[in-house]
Length: 412
Ligand code: NDP
Image (cartoon, rainbow, N blue to C red; front, side, top):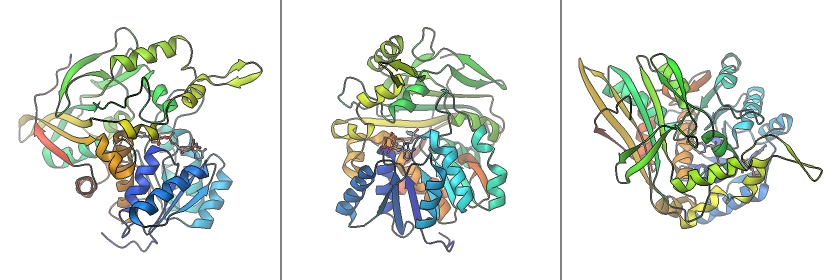
């Protein structure tokens, strides 16, 4: 890896499940991440991550309390601690504030989820793409969506485009969690963000335009049984996911792009009841003179995703099925990773959903810090060379396979 002359200091913002994994993985690679700072709203959570890292690897990390929505406070912390890169693993609401602080201080930026305004369950890249010119002028790089999906799924597509196809025409991203956390109802990452995502109207890309279909908990939602490697047949629901937005722009020749995620009947039934009684609402309601946002209250009642690892068993299987042309022939290839909840817990103290997000977050930061990815402006992952990232996935805990597969039909 080339020497970029930086100090190798990363500042991770957030101290949830994903941040815990990313901090552990950074601690495993001292030659790139020479100094690590974990800063979040609740200092005790940063300190707990620090203690665990000390115990496992004998490394000391710095910790700090910060409200990432307070841009001056964040700028002051960046000036004090002088990181080369900020890895944003707080919530999508903080993205623009953290990008503002990076712009002001001239520090590279990486995140795993695109911005959404707190008062509207709607996410899209436009808000962050609007920073392109300013990041360019400042001579710094922002890499958006360096988790698994978005993230690895974008890199899988870029790798397929570079090495396997002349043109990709049909893309299906399939995300299967075949694990069991042993709780009646819990979400695998931040409950508020998760519930906002899965209760939305679904969109997929077909014949040059977005087509809308009912949300996964509504009658008429689109689903089918897909036979996943290792996990077997699981009900997989069509869902809108943010990587589709950039992939349909950046991968030329795509005629259809869809995203599928597995959900159990138990999860969907709980979600329907919660929605029906108003607990998934994101607006303020008046309760005995207090303003309460029901989905935030629900989050306070549900298990912390970072705590689910203790009893989690089973695997995740996430990957892309792509059909297109190679040397005049139509071919289909499936690139996927299998991750085990118990092994993820043994290594980092968290479950596989946090692991499959935190590892690529570390790798994205590593690509920028080590100078493998260089650029000025704002980038989605498929715009960057996939090769070293793909090698790093194999090396740092998310090995992948490419196999031949039957194409997925239009109607499932
Ligand atoms: P958690 O809710 O477990 O953690 C979020 C952390 O951010 C918490 O420690 C929280 O602090 C902190 N935080 C929230 N607001 C602020 C603030 N204003 N200032 C400072 N810190 C703040 O979430 P996860 O770890 O599950 O998820 C982290 C991110 O990863 C999310 O954006 C999620 O959408 C994304 N993600 C991406 C995936 C992908 O594949 N691309 C998959 C899964 C998640 P506190 O502890 O005080 O609450």
